[in-house]
Length: 155
Length: 155
DNA sequence: GTCAATTCATACAAGTTTGAACGATTTTCT
DNA sequence: AGAAAATCGTTCAAACTTGTATGAATTGAC
Image (cartoon, rainbow over all chains, first blue to last red; front, side, top):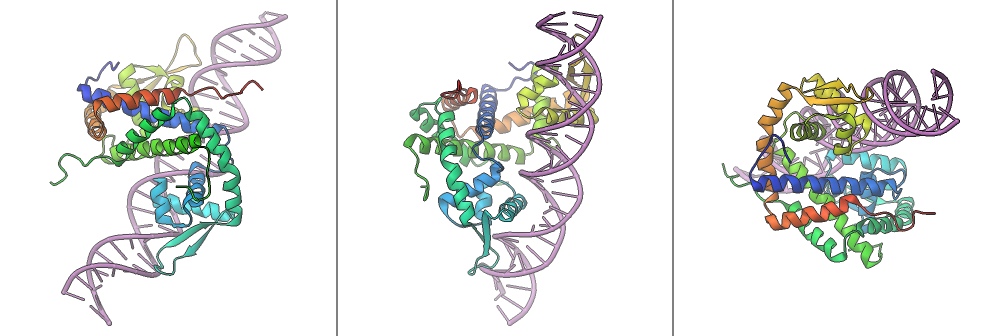
């Protein structure tokens, strides 16, 4: 109930939905993190290990697009993982601009050991929604994530 | 399609849903921010001004719970807004531990000027979903945001 | 009233993130 | 081949965030 702003019904609904989306995501991630599913790893570090674990070696640019963070940050995240011996860089021979990143044996062991518990916790936290509701939520989020072109981008 | 991890169907679904939720939220917020709806304001700063605008003066603790950030961060956010003359602190006379925060005239003018455009942009970005879909998304997020008690927290 | 426990806000150190600037490499065009 | 444009990763300063520790004020037990 805004005391000072009254937009169109579409605006009010959109703002309300955005707030709920953001709060749900933030509180969910915080709850998961507080349950210690990725100790001594930042969210970005964990996400990087997870991506390499599930999809295999990839370039920093690919990792960057998956993390949705800046390029500079990606460099730092991988620096820190590399310092700890969890990943290693390898210059691509085809295109010498690109750095391929892959898990080391230690990195593979760590993520292998951590991930099952993480998956279990996520499933628990998500279980307030039925599988059908989760699928619906996923569909809606997928649409939203892609986004739409602005009404007049030609000018 | 995980190459190394296979959990239960419930876990796979939950992980997939979480990724879609997080990506949707991040990319949506990034798109909105890049359209310049809150220039020279961090997300937390904008959120603070918006809360004060819509709900009136409140304590830092209340603001903190709305931002879902740490207490220390809330102090800094309000420090910075205060330095710019957009909000002001006032010690509560009832309970002298609490700091009430309220918009200054300048802060009110700023958020009044900015908010309509913000609302319009949010509505545009959200318009890939029908109103009905937005309501469904909001409901699901609301459930998720509250969370459930872990299965056996008694031990 | 006084002491202990709690709550609110601040201070500070460490880590994270961004955006801009830069060098190296590749691609495209002529 | 050679020049211009684009891409990839790194570096750096500034800002943001967190968690811990601390001081101030209130509440509750005695």
